[in-house]
Amino acid sequence: MKDIKKINGGVTAAKGFYASGAEAGIKYQNRADMALVVSKPAAEAAGVFTKNVVKAAPVIWDQAIISSGVKINAVVLNSGNANACTGKEGDRINLVMAGSVAEELGKADIFEREQDIEAETILTASTGVIGQQIKEEAVIWGAKKLCEALSPEKEAGTAAAAAIMTTDTVSKECAVQIEIDGKLVTIGGMSKGSGMIHPDMATMLSVITTDAVIEKELLQEILSQDVKDSFNMISVDRDTSTNDTCILLANGTAGNTEIKKDSKEAAFFAEALSYVTKTLAKKMASDAEGATKLIEVCVVNAKTKEEAVLLSKSVIASPLVKTAVFGSDANWGRIMCALGYSGVDFDQRLVDLTVSSANKSIVLAENGLGTDYSEEEATELLSGESVTILCDMKSGKKNAAAWGCDLTYDYVKINGDYRS
Image 1 (tube, rainbow, N blue to C red):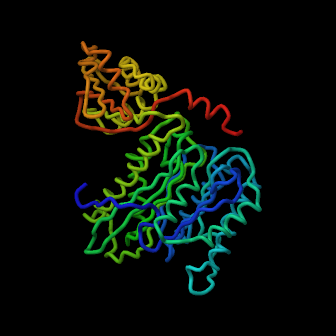
Image 2: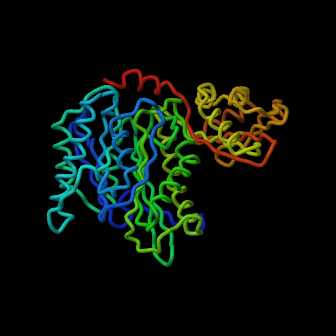
Image 3: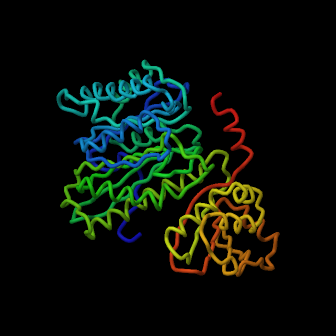
């Protein structure tokens, strides 16, 4: 990570960004359930969204706004209710949420005088139970409280990250700094997600902010490419959400020379963004519903990048692999099986499988056949909090990594009574 400095913070780490969290009473009692991220000045925006045919009202709203090219003043998010499968009433409530924030933000203390802010410059995001309507008075009240609490401080970003949690047990933030054209550029982000995680676009909910000056088209291109190796490479339960949303805002306050396509500065920015998104992705995987272990699957020496991705995601998504890791059972046949049904054609007689944890590793299979490893040592190794499964295909030079977690009794318990 040469010349990329990790710093404390999240969405308020970059200059010109404010955030807040508030208790609106959408579902939960005595906890924040709405969050706001504001850019001053308005920011260029890029986004990636769920490919699920069933899309929540905020997803449809955001896609239209981002494609229009308008600059964005804020992103408002709520937890506890997905506003998905809610019909015209859901669309109306989503507009109320955006409009209420626009109205209250125009009067906020961060401006020297009252501003005229349009609802179409406010992006929205929701997470929670599908098929239930959000109460209008809750989002109106929440918008007022959010705009009153706006702050550029680190704690404000943390409050926003906490407000979007559902079954998450910890909030998730990351921030880095790099130097471009002699100017300090910061990228910070937050995300939430612990269940219904098998992205086919980006992540569950994530907002990433940067003060970089960068071409809008390039911003979208970099984000779209980035999620292929970060958020798209995590899986908890093989369910792709109706609400998956990742927003990247760039307000240009760093003052660097504009980052342009195919430049070394663009590559450097993409590398820094990748550090943030992969960190957030791993945090979500390790905090999955009921999880006790983070699992990383590394596929190396595949024929193509596409095949490496398919192989790694097949293993990380396998319920049988997940339950074996939960039970600290070195059942390597399940790994081979998951590789085999991935859709990739490979020679099983070449494959080596290795598991590692805490700087210890054991080769479970060589050339497709089991080794004389110690079951006791393998069980002890698999009992660690983080387990890596290395699959060497020995058929090419392309690699990929995916992240997930074990599948536990608590996952079933949590999802058995999720609505209660």
